[in-house]
Image (cartoon, rainbow, N blue to C red; front, side):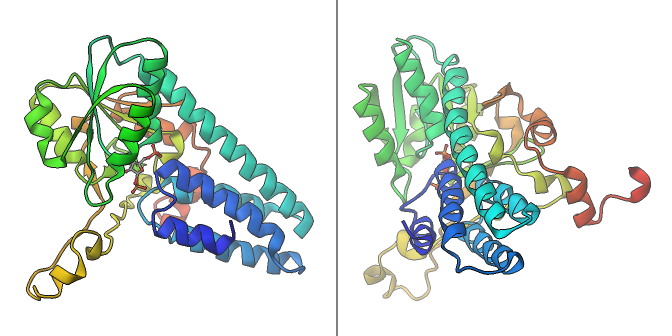
Length: 320
Ligand code: RI2
């Protein structure tokens, strides 16, 4: 797939899911590194940084995307020559893809322990990390069923039920607004994440926070499955996660909308679930209470926190 094809596919959500977007972005940069016309190091670096910025701009909410792209940018900046840069980008990109896939597998192993025989598990949207927990529990021989939501307007629930059905897991498919109706029979909610904020709040597919609210009311445990590269370092310095709002045409066809000039269709595709509604965040490094999100950013993400604080002007030299 060409670099431009990857950009377009991510924008159109043909490539979607926070982890998949991150892997597609670093793979696209890897291909792109080689295809830039022969040039001096600085021109190559500029080309790479422009490409990185274009990828990051495709979808603003999933922090996995800038986190993964930043890993590539770091080696681009460090390269001593164009050839060395291409080699380092290739190695870094392959290493990220490998570690991302193994993180999802590890999350499945850790998260599956929370699913018991006889449970009814509710999931929302189509998260490979959340599904890894469910599929691993099935592989481990536990007998449970799943309630999967439809996920208007993108209908990602269809992908979820295909995976669950393919694995022979008993599944009930419901419209998003039926969540509270069913919550009393749910034993556990498992969802994915597009971003985890330093205070443990989770940004995920629109509707997640309503589900968390219903789960809290019914005293149903609410678990988030998220790789460490979905934790948002810049929230350490007070940056907010931008919530993507997509085209109204995804919600209402033009044929109907055109006759309703006074109606504005809003289509935010993510919302924020406060940390108080989350019992556990399952990462590949272990399951943590949301209050420990800072520790993940500090210890596992490998970001230079001091560099951030300097950029944001909140770190003073006398604090070193
Ligand atoms: P994994 C998705 O976003 C969903 O919100 C999902 O919960 C989240 O990414 C994480 O997905 P979208 O791309 O990385 O469908 O766990 O907007 O697959």
